[in-house]
Length: 138
Image (cartoon, rainbow, N blue to C red):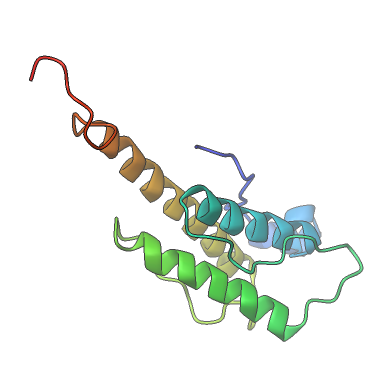
């Protein structure tokens, strides 16, 4: 799979102070997170998680929208933890959001993707790609 979601994990205090694009959490950030979570879940057969990924610049995120996104991430994290131990999802992170929490959130999504990728690769190393398929030389 290895999709590049453009996750941003290197925000700094200077970005906030200088007012750079990375210094603000906005619609494009919410869309990136929502899309990544939905895409990872869909790719691994977990169904569709209710993460909003169609924010417009003028949209005002309501608590319920952000909480739904949080629960989608938490659901994905709960499933991924069966295969590896990604970082812990902080308590509802949009409360007092800052650049460090934003970095951690996107790092967590990247970690979950890496864990699932490594799980997928290990399936092919077992000597049997499809159930019942013969392995030559066995």
